[in-house]
Length: 255
Ligand code: ADP
Image (cartoon, rainbow, N blue to C red; front, side):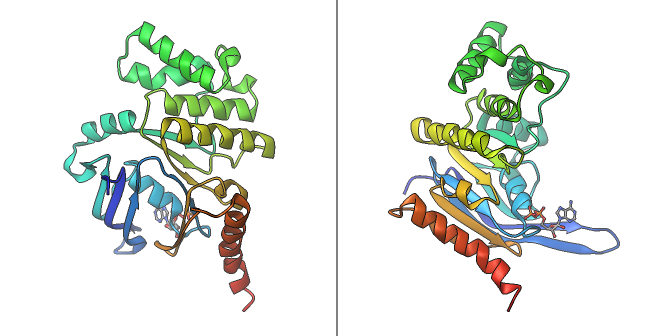
C-alpha cells in the first residue's frame, strides 16, 4: 500500500466557547486519502464539514490527534514552516472565490508566486500556462468585478494551481455558480485529477456534483458516518446512492 497523501489519526477539534464552555465539533476521526483520489465531503449543515476541511488543510490546527500531509506531521512544524508547506502543497478554492477586487486576474493568480519570491519571468510563464489550461488568457488584464462568476472561479482555480499543488481543497466551490459554470468547473477539476493526478477534496451539498467524485465521505455529528466508493458503479447509480444518503437525513425528520 503506498503512503497516503493525507492521513488523520484521532483528529479531534474542540471549540472553546469561553467560560469553560466547550464544543467538540470533530470526534477522533481516522481518515486516509490516497494520492490521485477525488473525494467529496457531504453532510448536514453544522455536522463539521468545514471544521474537517480546515483541520486537514492546515487552516486550523486540531485540538487532539494527528494530521499528516504528504508524509509530513503538521504538529512538528512551526507556524512559518506550515505557511511555506501550505503554499507548496495545497491549493484552495472557495465559494466566494476570494479574489482581491483591486487586483487584476493576472495579479491575483500571480500572488502566491510573488509571496514565494519567484522570478518575474518564471512567474509570467507559470501564470500563462495555468491560464491557458483553464481557458482564461483573454481576461488576465481584467479586474474580478469585470468578469462573470464562472470566469472568477476559473481565476481562483488558476491561483490554486499556480504553485503546482499536490492537493486541491475546495469548500462549496460551485455554491455561487449557475449550473453551466458549475459543470465547466467540474470538467476542469476532473481533468486535473485524471490527467495530472492532483488529489481533490471538495465539500459540496449537491449530489450531482458529488457524483463526479471517486469516493464520498459523509460527515454527521462530527464523525465520518459513511463512505461510499464509486468503484464499478455507473455515475447514475453512484448519484442515486448519494441522493439516498442525503435524503435519509430529511426522511428522519418525519419519523
Ligand atoms: P458544516 O461545515 O458542516 O456546516 P461546521 O464545521 O461549520 O459545520 O460546524 C460544526 C459545528 O461546530 C457547528 O455546530 C458549529 O456551530 C460549530 N463551530 C464551527 N466553528 C466554530 C467556532 N469558530 N467556534 C465555535 N463553534 C464553532
